[in-house]
Image 1: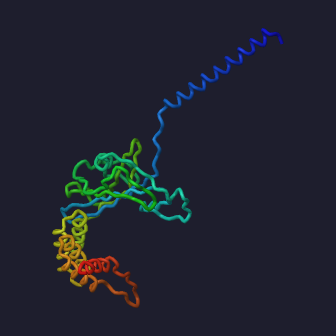
Image 2 (image 1 turned 30 degrees about the horizontal axis):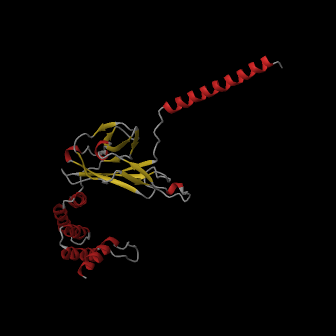
Image 3 (image 1 turned 180 degrees about the vertical axis):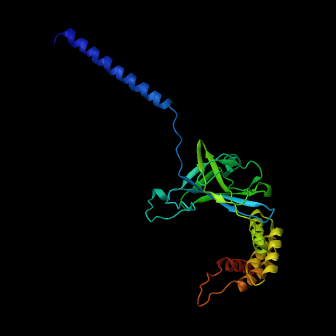
Amino acid sequence: MSAIMRKALSMILVAGFFLACGISCKKEKEEKARPVAEPILPLNLVLKYTAGGPGGTSLLTLRFFGARMGMNSADRKPQKTGKETESAQEIQALEIPPDFWTKSVNFFVAEGEGTTEGVELEQGVTLVAAPGVQKLQLGPEAFCQALYSLSASAVPQPGKTLKATVLIGKQRYDSNAVTVPGPPVDEWERWVREAVVALQVGRFDSVLEAAEGMIALHPEAHHGYWYRGLALEAKGNFEEALAAMRTALEKYPKSTKDRYQEPPDKILQKIRQFESRRR
């Protein structure tokens, strides 16, 4: 091979090398400039509806789970599969803006079973309580929840379906569907509903009123004394709360030969708690 041909071949090889580098650099720049899709977080939402009394406030509880386990599609609760790996037990951190619970969470009346469309509840929904942190720690056993009140005027008609949606970046997450129940069937159910809602939103005088209503209707039942004790505890009347809890324990159904009754662990816990304050 002549010197001229060798020189020409070398120049071709060098040119090819720089051309390949240029194409590679161009592709790399294009890939860097291309917008990266936001990762889809393994997140599951569980919505619970707590009905209030007639003309009263109802509650919406929205719970966030890290969806890394097998999930029960019926109630969206974590369900152990027995095959969890170490990665399934990891906790994921979700950073949220300060107004996340009021701006990114929405509730709507679904148009039908399984639909993700409906009429948004724009009024009557108020945030009651939510985690006061900017980073949520979520996992199979680690969750957080927010509580919202729903005014009587905003409550949909009985039988309607409510759902919640959450926007994280550009990703939308939908909760399970809950059905709005009808009005209380009797006075007992009315008092129970009012006690449950009032307790969660901190209206302890209303809890006490509902408890007295339950006791007046069914003095043989333990429920009214339980709520009386909780209301008195919240008001700082620990001696009276202890007496109410002891009565609740006396009224609690006992196991029989034909029927086993779970021990009243919550009542016993409260009694021990109040008795320890005496020491």
